[in-house]
Each structure stands twice: as structure tokens, then as C-alpha cells.
Image (cartoon, rainbow, N blue to C red; front, top):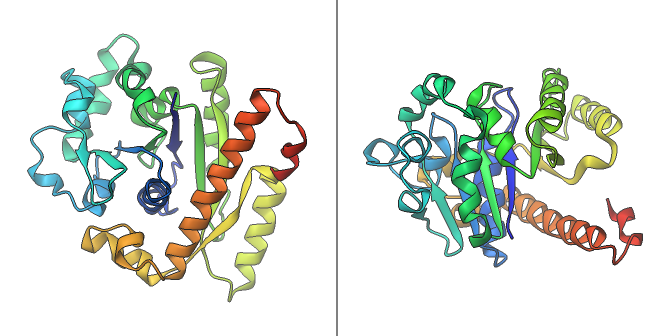
Length: 271
């Protein structure tokens, strides 16, 4: 059975889409079968993987509201093990159209559950808001990765996101957990970055990934060429850090799996 992970922060500019594209790419290169669901009406994940979002005849919107089987809208990417459920501006109207539906918070879950076992991981790139689309992402997921930018007011809004996650756990998705907190856009030339890192590690403690994503021109350039950093510049610092993140996630996921089976509790110390 696969694992569904939402990448979520209602604050924009935190590296959410960059993480969605590049983390899934390195997981695919590590031999995992991965589906990336672009659930943001901006469709930046779709275009960042080289798909023309403006020419799509069907997208995640049509699975969500026209009941087209999601298998019919999934596209291959430039990486053998990475697949994309694309999005575009059509999804903008979904927020309003979902309001009148029964189980409106569970529509994405209904779509993804039948195909969950076909993938090792399904990642959802959520929109920068706490509306119905993000709510659907969190209800559909087993866990959530929260990217946080290493800048002033880094924790602004995160408290509200955590409250939302806890409410969803209580009422809609009891199994939802915080998979990890990812520090992004770090500039180690400044004292501010170190202060923010310390603040976030103090707040989230062991939930913060050891891997920190630095500011990188190459990471910023890659989406303009429709490529993940692994294909655009695999030797760049951004590529090396996202590869590290993928390996860290796999290691922690293996430890959690062993732990849940009761085989070993000693490995908890890794987290």
C-alpha cells in the first residue's frame, strides 16, 4: 500500500512547488513509483514538469468534478517512475463548485484511494491557502510536509495550519500526521538564516528534516525549462540537497514502518 503525502503551507513563496517537483523526481530516480498530483489552479507543478497546462483537454479538475477516472488524466513525465496528475486554471472554479457537494472535503480522497496501491508514494502539491482544495488535500493524505522559508516571520501562519491539521485529525482524518518540516531558501551568509533555523527547530523539534534547501539560481531556472533540477543540473547544490532530502525521507519512512510493526523501537532515535 502506498503513502499519500500533502505538501502544504498556506503562505506563498515557501518553495512548495519546487519541493513537490524535485523531491518526487529524486524518489523516482531512487526506484520508487511516484504520482505527483498538481492540486494548485496555478498549475506551476504541471508546467515545471514540461507539460503545457494551457493545452490540457482533461486535468485533475475533471476527475474531481466530472468524475473522470483519475487514471485517464495521469501523464508520464521525463522520468521513468514519476507520473503527473496535471492541473490548470480550470481548477479555480472547483473551490466554489465543491461547496454544494455532499462529503465535499473527501472528494480527492475518493479519487486517490482506488489507485493508492499502484504507487509507493502519492504527493499532492496543495494551493497556498486554507480553502476547500487544501482541505481536500489534507483529508486525502496520510501525512503532510510543511516547507518553511528561512526568512523573517517564517512561522507566521504556520500556527493556523497546525490548528487546521489538528481539527482535521479530530473530525475528518484521524490518521493525519506531520511527516516533516522542511527549511527552504536558506542563505547561510546571513545571521537571520541561522536564527530562523534555530527558532523552527526549537518549535518543531524532531519533526524538522536535517536537510536544508539553500537559495539556488539553478533551482529557480529549472521550471522555466520544464525540467526538475535532476535533469536540468544534477551537479548543482540544489540537486544535491533534494537528493539528500529524498534519501532522508526514505530512511525515516523505513524506520517508521519497522516501528509500526513493532520490530524495533531503538531506531526511533534517528528521528
